[in-house]
Amino acid sequence: MLACGVDGAVDVFDVTRPGRTPATRAETRSRDDLDGGGQRGLVSCVDACPTENHLFCAGSYAGGRDAIDCGVYDARAEGGRACSWSARGGGVTQVRWSVDGNFIYTASRRSDDILCVDVRNTLGVVYALKRAAHGTNQRIRFDLEPCGAHLVTGGVDGFVRAFDLRTGEEVGRTQVSPNGACVNAVSFHPYSCAVAGSSEKFRRLACVVGERVFVDVSGDDSDSDDSDDSDAVKRNDFGVSFWDYPTIEASWA
Image (cartoon, rainbow, N blue to C red):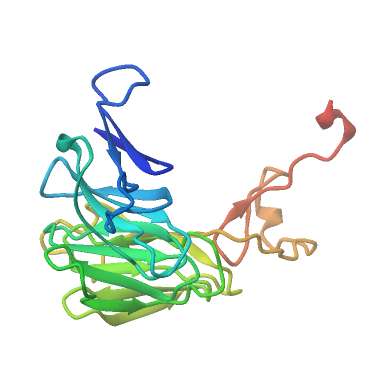
């Protein structure tokens, strides 16, 4: 099944059946003005529960810190809402279930906190993971280790931080963007160190720097004499590859 967020609803499609008509629609916005549990705004992110096939969580841009902007829904019940709560941010940018299906992690724009909520009691917050994400509307995504032990996130300061999900404490950080550009996405390799006897502390992690950084490429490349290609690939201090495309008039024809 494929869940897609829209304004005030989540459309759930059966991927084994072609067509544009969703198999079911989960209405997130309250149909009754007297119902205070309805989720408001445009649904900005969804995540499927790893332990219950038809449950999913949705976050939305609700337009206020106290607005209901998170909810859990059952796709089998034509949009039946199991619970809803406020993430207390400026709009939810990511929701993610824990591997055991008992907790949900939420991140909001212009907020330093990734909140952990117990789905069995959404009135409180279990703990908040602190990262550098204030002052930006970017989606700064985080990822959970496949075994569920750690959460890793980027930040506007160029650092990647790792947290122990048992306690919510930061257990490590590394600077992957030397010039301080925002690291707005990280992703764990699904099985890189799953082999017995591996000495890796964490699974392999991919990071994305989502800001343009201007570097000086006017100097001579010390390795240019060893290359057979005049358009050889160069690398800057981010480890990002780039090459000088042809600038002659014929290349623009």
